[in-house]
Image (cartoon, rainbow, N blue to C red; front, top):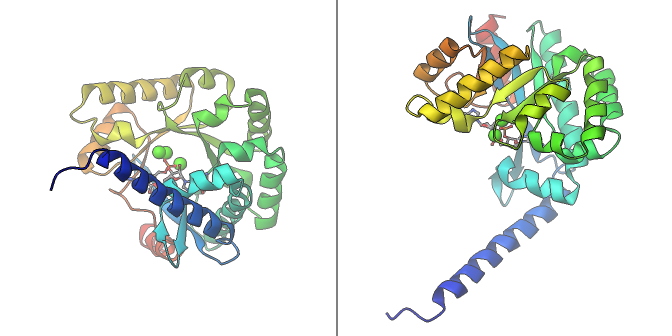
Length: 279
Ligand code: C2E
Ligand code: CA
Ligand code: CA
Ligand code: CA
């Protein structure tokens, strides 16, 4: 058949409106996701490169919806951010994550910490610091068992306010990690002014660094920076033994990735810990 004039345009419109429709339906569903118990956390182990001990877990949010199925956080976190739903959802994540870590510590696992992702919106709402304090008190978790992962875009907005909150948190002993390090803008200035404990090397650099000299150069530079600034460094997206060995040789201290474990449900993570720590 002859291609219709303007066929591409029409196709494009149908395509985008279908996607828009899905987004709007999803946004509506997200409003009731918490109340309907559709959210849950997965936990991905973080590993010491030297002895392969677990040093903690990153909490990763999941949404299981009756119609949409398992929705990726890459799709629904932006919706939660623009709608403001990230505020109640983020508070829920923090509580669940601290609660689970405290449970593991009480069961005798450890020493470990739980890493929780924060969105910029959570920093904009002035009560992030009191929220963290309240959550730690309510879950009975000591501050040094909590690590908050922030991104460069958070640090860029409201620099003064963000810095103030970060200072309060680290003064209390909460750990701060810079997530996806090197993927944002002007990363280096944050190293100077911000009270960070950990740099996370983004998986885009890890994926191909064994056969890509530029990626390897970036990883080397991040590790050198972490050493100069006395920060811990963790590589994410470690999928192969060869990557882990090379990263360790370059001076990377900690790993996170499918080589060790995919993100696990709380039940799976507990079984995984039992195997690891023999309890
Ligand atoms: P992220 O913080 O960079 O998290 C790492 C992502 O890499 C996770 O995707 C994890 O499942 C995936 N990953 C871990 N190891 C490997 C590996 O070896 N290979 C590959 N290919 N991928 C690996 P996930 O769980 O889909 O989360 C995506 C993003 O959603 C996160 O990226 C984070 O930005 C956001 N997110 C997840 N949970 C939360 C949350 O509770 N709050 C906020 N604000 N954002 C969250
Ligand atoms: Ca993260
Ligand atoms: Ca990351
Ligand atoms: Ca990432």
